[in-house]
Length: 103
Image (tube, rainbow, N blue to C red; front, side, top):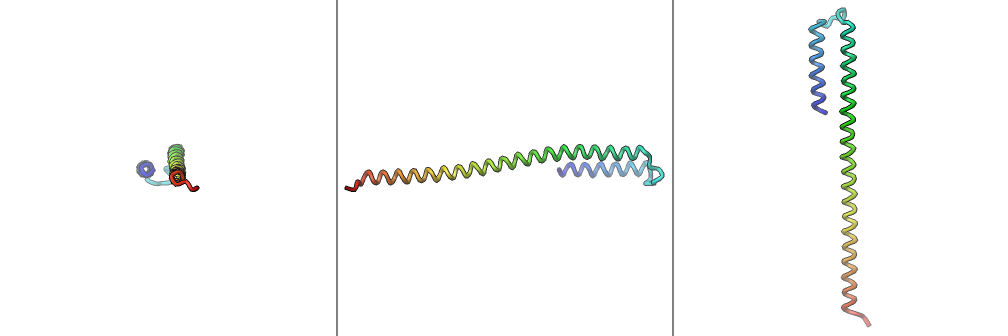
């Protein structure tokens, strides 16, 4: 995203230089070709910006989904560890009761 902004600024500077060289920034010298060029530049910029935004949003959504899945897996792991600890504790209690039967 940062490199795209830098590229846009460079292209803007080049277009300002070319505009200065062809018109000397005089309003009387602006022709329809200049207006068409500006509109084409804006259109191309919007298309490229839309594509980059779409791709970056898709990447961000995939990363967020992976984070959610990872957190869910961590919760499941903790629950399984608690269950395993409870089972081990119960087995130990059963073994103690089997060794020392109370009559």
